[in-house]
Image (cartoon, rainbow over all chains, first blue to last red; front, side, top):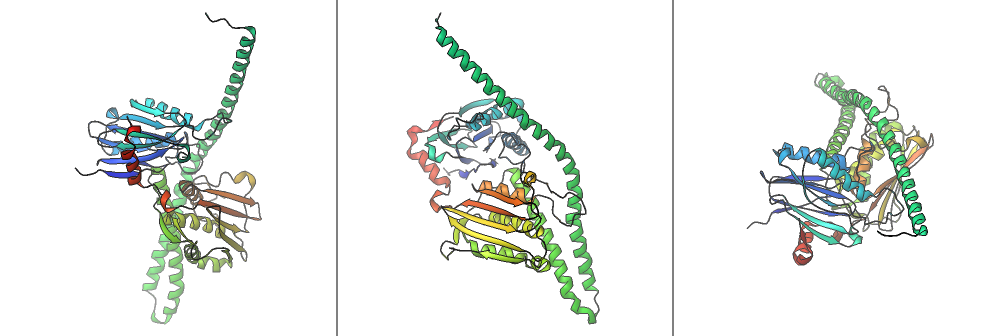
Length: 158
Length: 299
């Protein structure tokens, strides 16, 4: 059996593929949303660092509201119907000490993911969020399965 | 039913008060943010309209002059062939301008599409900087600007670093371009490169018109030009710095700006030095999953 391609997803980027691909990423307070279609077996993932674009800089998928919208659009362009899409949400840990901050980035990242997926009526099949640890995840775009592995703090700065 | 002592009750009430206070504070901050976003949305609509006319100027004007001048060359009589050098220079300048604009437009489109994974390779930073300066030579001569290079402590060995070449070039070129654009005639630009604490620090200082305090925060916004008049002598459409910042962030670095109105501006780019081992290698991560299979969860 041939090994599927691997793709390392950097923060602020997104990737989707119709070929079987293992999309890997490392999450700290960032959140990654994996969207998969069980019919066409096409899947994609984003990796955003902040919840909302506030008009600063470029409107890039560094921001949750843009990253989720762009991922859905990209999959739709690849022929996936929105009604078939299923989502999985990961990350949003509190890897950096933010006790003094009222606005815990990780939590806000998670909540924007939930709000937007609900708005688009995409069901969340599973999620692994919050906590104090960073995560490595591998998303297989053919099977829709996500493997998750906790990592210690020093890696989880993103 | 659990019985609470008065003390516990008071404690609980106090806690609730604090929580309430925090919630109000948070709400206030969010409302402030929302107000800011609202203003920006209004602006963005106006900018969009402006953008189209800018693009038209930026792309069609250079193209027309390239077409016009090259046609002139083909009709030049034998005795005036010496003029070709001047014409070629104009064509080169216009084409160079166009090239820069298009590079920025495509880079912005890629960043906004989330398609900007960095690719690292070993490059010689000193020669890269010299090459970038060289591309602006004719503009520098035109404005009589002197470039002062300060590469202290840079050796043949440490000048070779792992960098994303295309992105670093565009970062340097956009900041340098601005420095030249806003410099006065007969002034100078100081370019300083140093390594400290596992970071590469590149600072580009001009002595031009500078940026006021209230404007420093908006210069990185897309399509933002502080001088928005269409006849402005300064070309470009305000994408350059937003691209530079997005790229620097992607490479885990930061840009600091020190400036005072009419005294010039200094842009300081700080990037972490990348070690070969720390580059995220998909196969290494996959190996982690194979060897630590008992700690892997499947969703």
